[in-house]
Image (cartoon, rainbow, N blue to C red):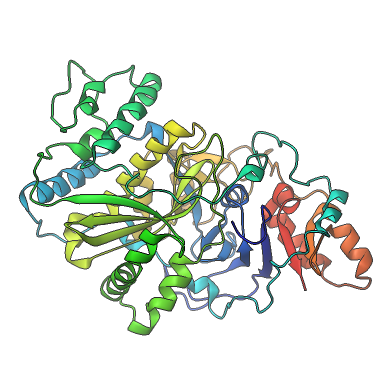
Length: 492
């Protein structure tokens, strides 16, 4: 667990300057608020992404939606209700044909994660702060009791913060927990997953599909459409020409599986960035790989009602015949699996690994939901309607976009007509609706000053003549009252 215990610690940077946009290439049209997260609990990050924030390494940013050139809307897919489209089915069959017979398609098109950006453009010039606020004198943290949010009591259902966080322990998940058609263990997990999911959606059918170790095409007497899991395992013989293994490893330099695959994974990242995105070698070296895809502020946590692998940041590795060919970087949070990034071997681009990995991640989310019922969404990052290359995320349905003004979820079908008219739109159609977690009491915002946790009111009294009230108010309004009373804002 991070040195800060169960407390999140951030430094806010504001967002007045424009940067080059990775979508439309505008030189200074990209505007976002940013903060450096020294450590963060998974519940705090869940609440932040539900307010439009997103992380790149330890840098957490929120686009200034009504100002930036290409507004970026948080998008989530309802994993339990997801049904693959014709294109998705085509991709799954294409991969299975390659695994079974070695057939490699000639076309090289993928509408999956290939268009995703590293988001590093948001932090040009942003370096880790020189001071380390994590060295909190915990004997002084009792000052937090002057604030009503001490993280020692149960919270309301939407925030559900931290009675389980206080019971958290370091977790070292075992590899191979991801949905993998070549592993009997994963198929048994699918049995359980299907029994519960189909009880709600498809009246308990297709249980015979996954009851067999071999993914035989027998579908019993069911008229219901084949499930995502059924397509993933379809047509795979017991002895395929190629073997694909999916391994989930925690992003931790103390984990032996992560360490053992680190160099190979970093080399694959560099090859992907140079071939697919045209990066120069110095732009995608080992230090960049570590900074963006291995350094995470999220604490590894477990909870009684959480998934077996725990919460935190992970690499879901795709091993083909003993070699890593793709890696999906994921955050497992209380309510969702959040996709951070994907990189893959360019030689296999015709297999549409971006689309394939997204489908596997949705199936993985459904698997985790069987262990943790509230974990039922798959977050695809940002949906950028003004960038046609990024619209593919809207094809994973049913899905919602986050309203940038009320922070409520709106079905994407209702959003598209508005976004066709204007790149920025208040998506919530209810003109009376507002931000339920809007800042109401600045005095209750928690700050960390001289290793002591205190509400902003106490900090302001100590720092007479301090001129940072406007900055603190801006930060608190962006993270919302709930997070502002829980996350520690570092003050030098």
